Amino acid sequence: MKNALISIIGIFIFSFLLGFSPQKVTKKAILIIHGGAGVITRDRLNPELEKEYRSELAKTLQIGHRILKTRGSAEQAVIEAIENMENSPLFNAGRGSVLNEDGEVEMDASIMNGKDQSCGSVTGVRKIKNPIRAAQLVMNKTKHVFLAGEGADEFGEENGLPLESPEYFQTERRLKQLEERKKAGDRRGELIFKDSKYGTVGAVALDQNGNICAGTSTGGTSNKLKGRIGDSPIIGSGTYASNSTCGVSATGDGEYFIRVQATHSVSAIMEYQKKGLNEALIEVIEKKIAPMGGDGGLIGLDKDGNYAWHFNTEGMYRGVLFEDGTMLVEIFGSN
Ligand code: ASP
Image (cartoon, rainbow, N blue to C red; front, side, top):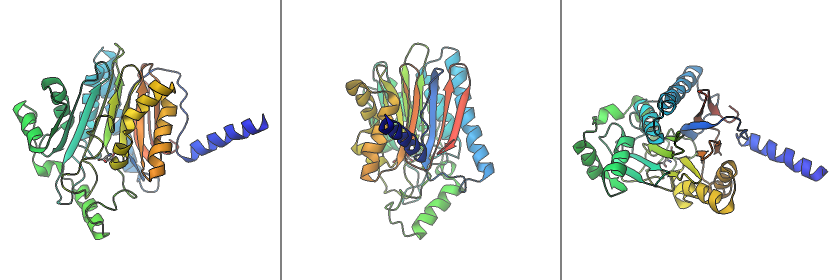
């Protein structure tokens, strides 16, 4: 008995140190979002910037709320939530994407519907203002699931998606970040992982018909090799959804998330091992990603509206919206 008590206390302390707070679900969650995980600590984020992040995350959840409360679909909520974050230069997606070794943007995005597991992805797009919209078009308007580079940009253009110039995507902040990395001796993205604020965006929604949709959008990693593809556009690694289990979106060192098929693994753990969402997220981060040396986070919603997030970085921009319109926005390990 005494030993059991000690282990329970131990687990709580361990979880707290990892920046994870066990989620008590009292209300149904209908939308969960992230804006990237990384070295996000109070001393690194000045109060004004923290306020900007919090308000952009809250605005994103409000957009989702307007859609979901009027019986809009989970797909529409995910698209519009991600589009809002792509349009904000704060995040590493759309405008404000990080730059590759040549100082150019190459953006990736993916989306998946849990109802029929239809999905769509784009990688290496340079012109489409909102890559998540291109991923949605691939899903809904083609028989394919994945388009790359020029072909993806052209496909978006042909289907009427707004395009932007390289200057629109490249912000001062990202140019400075690239310069600093090169100065620090980071040759072609090798040092990227340990001191990054990642900034990828993701969303998972559950609509009134019980459909789950998940999506992720990113500029990838700063100073990456030209042509590099991360986990975000890869179904099962960066994004996954199934109405019988959950929807999940990932952020972090993409190379590790690809190796363990992170987001599909969460669903598989729930389906085959009959574990809950929270436990499944922890298992993937702590038992799969972390032991290999990878950092990052996962967010998810299960079919009953339970939500969970877990990360092994100092922070993750994140928020959740409940059925009654209330929301929670957090950044650091403890809140
Ligand atoms: N996972 C993304 C990638 O590797 C980066 C991130 O989440 O910040 O492209």
